[in-house]
Amino acid sequence: MVSHFNDELPGWEDDQELIIMLMQNFFKSTARVNFQNLLSGEKKEYAQDLLTAVIEKQAPCMELIEPKLNNWDKDRVALIDLLLLRMGVCEFLFFPTIPTKVTINEYIDIAKQYSTPQSGQFVNGVLDNILKDLEKEDRVRKMDRKN
Image (cartoon, rainbow, N blue to C red):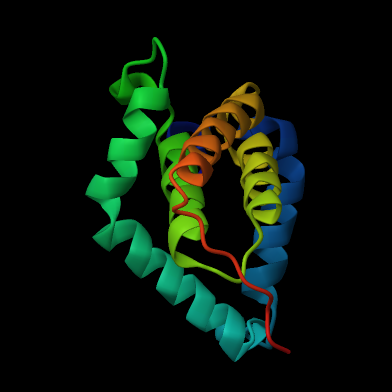
């Protein structure tokens, strides 16, 4: 188990004791957690729609992203950063009820938490530049959420 974590999660040792304790508690638990029950139907639908959009719209999203990777080889950009950028572009273009500021802030937070130390600024800069271009081209269509 430890070698797997070393291979898959470099630096995990900082939280090793906590991770092992949580895993042991989970596996000892008599009540199994059904993670599907933790999400509302609306959140499940959103997640499925976003996943589908990110997969189906990969080419047009990358056409918007690649020119903004100033001096970066796209193969050297962290994979999670590219995925976050694709998700952000999909939300800009295909999710009219999600405000653009919310999209940018959420993906900055995710990048800070799960990617490199510079990823938050990187994702912010790229998404902000893409959004400016999309707004100039009048391609962003947002509307109020209906409650």
